[in-house]
Image 1: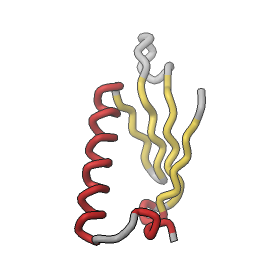
Image 2: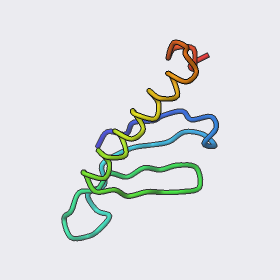
Image 3: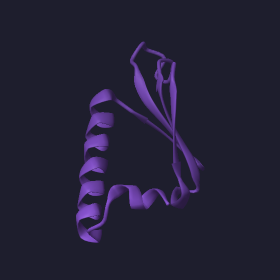
Length: 74
């Protein structure tokens, strides 16, 4: 399975996101999020809901700051 790494400097480091087929042991597929000090397992719909909430919050933060998104990468 592919692993996506997201650098999050204020979250303590890198966040890893991947599919986890073995977590529940009953053939349910989960989305696993490994954060420094924490691991989160989500059902598909929960992962989609979280992704949408993050997109909306990021858009709102960008509107509040009134600056280009690439400015955050610096």
